[in-house]
Image 1: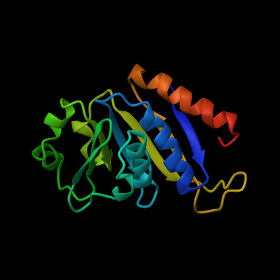
Image 2: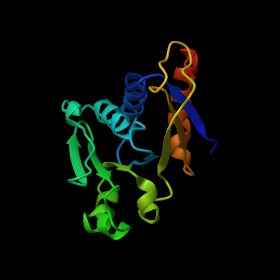
Image 3: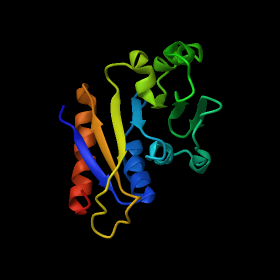
Image 4: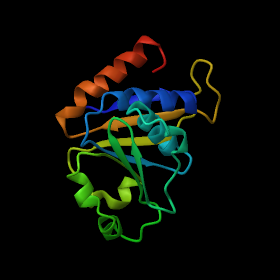
Amino acid sequence: MDRVERLTQSAEETFELARQLGEGLKGGEVLALVGDLGSGKTTFTRGLVCGVGCEDYMRVNSPTYVLEQIYQGRLVVRHYDAYRLGSPGELDELGFEEALASGAVLVVEWADRVDELMPSERLLLELSFSGDSGAGGEPGNCRRLSFSSESTIWADRLAGLEGARADNDQL
């Protein structure tokens, strides 16, 4: 699959893009999030959790100290943060392999630190700061979101997001 890239002008736009993606999730998907501190991984996760219908989406925060948080909407979302892990084995000790088989949506921040545990069907999302402020965007708030996957299940979902964003001339 080709890479789909999106430019968001604010945290609200990052949230909205993730919410749209979350609305189309069916369960069992794995999203691997990679990016520097402050690049929008947790904001994206908050939007995704909102998109699956979790009313408590505003309580989504980085699970850095608890390592895993679980949110219930029409689907269960298990949110992991691998930033403080000493090794991928620590994530496995949390029951990550069992979670893969549970049908829950799994979101892993700092997934590059546990890459060997990630299934090949994952959606990789690389978030980065963008110097391009675009139409009306404020410098410092712009993010480039690069989506890629080896799995064909993501192609239509990402194409839909790409189309929605292109219609708004915000790509």
